[in-house]
Length: 299
Ligand code: SF4
Image 1 (cartoon, protein in one colour):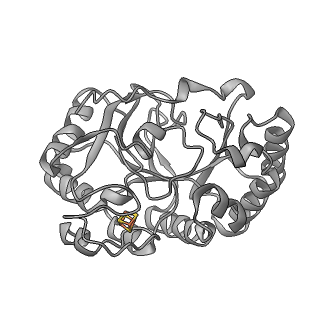
Image 2: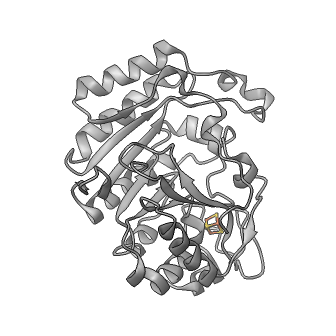
Image 3: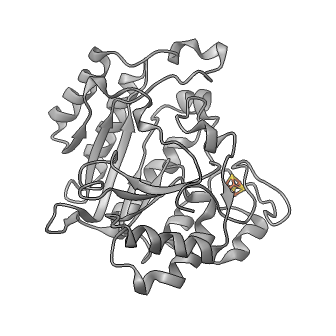
């Protein structure tokens, strides 16, 4: 895949088909990568932020646009600075020089051609893993194009039901694409592998954010994972940081609250019953501490 992919963009399941060199698609972005921050980040899972922190690169724009997004400033308001692929490559090397545990590409889908271009420039200098940290709303062709570039996939599976996916992300086909993408990711990078410091250097972490009123949806996702994903290839991170940040639409008041202890714990117990291995979060973890200051630092 090269930069020509932007000329009739079908990088994600939205399949806008527009020319991003002169217009913007549903993700809100043209053809040059826009980044809001590049920094060492200690709040990822312990095997991702294990020593000095993940080398996060926060891309602006998003193909999914969840109404509750905690990174609304960059995903919907599109704050960020435009870079060239060469400058993006320099950002990767600079993070490695600062001691980053990995290069953690956050919401990268709509810039995959630029990311491949940047990695082609500096792959021979990178000695740390490259992590692809995504909403899960992906096309198999885009994941196939990343073969050989990505060491660790970190996809969300957000919804099982198409009603919830439609209501909160305007993506009724979300699970169809996310489940196929997660399967493709685990097949591409294979079994979990760690370095001597306990850092994940190969494999997949499937993330799931428990949402208010959707614990049964969460359980269906866990059932699907238990039935379809080899446990030696993926860990599951059950997240408890859902926080209504003030921009939930008035007609979606059912998600304008935090997840209760009962809701979260019941999902965790379900995972334990299925023998799923991975990570959980304390009940106190909902809040603003997981939202970085998007201040253009590091770029
Ligand atoms: S990456 Fe953006 S322009 Fe391309 S198909 Fe997805 S939403 Fe549309």
